[in-house]
Length: 155
Image 1 (cartoon, helix red, strand yellow):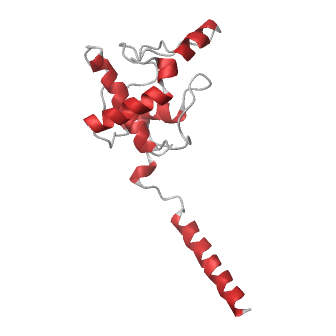
Image 2 (cartoon, one colour):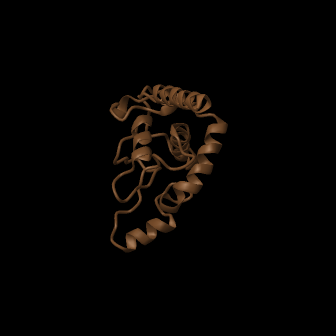
Image 3 (tube, helix red, strand yellow):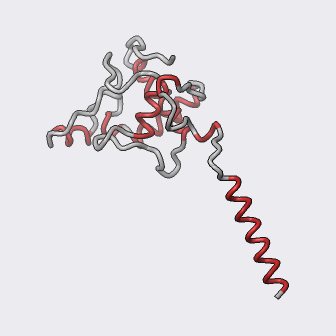
């Protein structure tokens, strides 16, 4: 009887402790607040060769089907969507950005998606804020890979 009571108390204490740890306080690894103005969100991940390599791997796996291997919006899924009358996947290296051009705006677009044509990565297994920031860095690098001058800048 005493053992059962002891185990119950320990279990209850553990549950209280876990609830306190997840009380809604965010850490830098949680990513920007959903209420933050995307234009003012700063990229905490430096655009290093390692970040770009990580972003490139993630892009190939998660984005290239629509945006194409080089970011021109000519991926296989994009072609099928266009044939079905859906909007074309945006060219990520042209001089026109329809959904914002700061690091924070790009982060929010990738995290939250853009309606039914682009699902967000928020909640996908293995994809957290740091991975999305690597994608932001890689998307920015696509402009330079095409020999163009960067047209987007972080505030």
